[in-house]
Image (cartoon, rainbow, N blue to C red; front, side):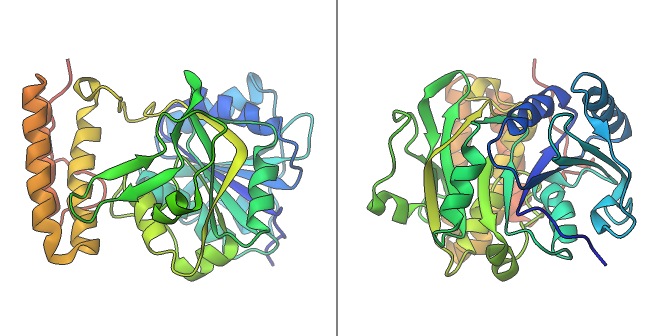
Length: 345
């Protein structure tokens, strides 16, 4: 029999970025919400997993816990070859680290834990967090209060780590004409809230920090895994059906962005893997949601490749073309060895 869960489960996917995860966990440790557990999926292999576990036991002085034989979350099985169970030294919040058997991408890493949670009782919501985020102490409380108002997918005040007075976005809006994803509210002053008509245009909450209820997951299903990275959050929101999107303006979350994959605001510094997945997944998403209009989106993608040439990034333009063609051919999931990306520099 599976053990009862705390009311809130916090899910984090890492890829060889222990410093980000440590910072995120420190912020969670200061939370004024009491009933939560943390589940980390390390996609970066055994060495990264062991490095993270050692840092938590040493630098963060977490305490090891004995696994519960009746709790499916503690078992090294399925998508996890190893699970380490810890807790914060000064409060009884459990932190589980799972070593993924492969790099499952963002959606797959989230689903690896969600699949186990669905077989347990008690929990009411999950908070999906990027590892390079830092939550304010009242963040979890504000999210859960909004969930109690009947919203199924909830975002908070997501701000730039180096400019916490500016909003990254209220949420994301996908254009069925161009296929571009608009960050709604970008660069507005922190502390502002979206007007109802603005909130109604949002397709989804950014996967960097999104709370979804148990009812949402049971009705809508898990995150799509075929994107590997990017667009899985938009896909989740587009499938939400009757579940309303809410905004918890007092839930403040600082976000660095792109620390694992190397994406950047300046397109000339964006990693080629980020460029490739952005291009490929825009077409995969359009084939699913825009039907025959995906060809129009392909055309907009070509213009994006031209833009890279104009700004002096010809290799990024080439990678964009590879991504667009792979998306048109329906290639999905983890990029395989056949994808030859040039190295930046």
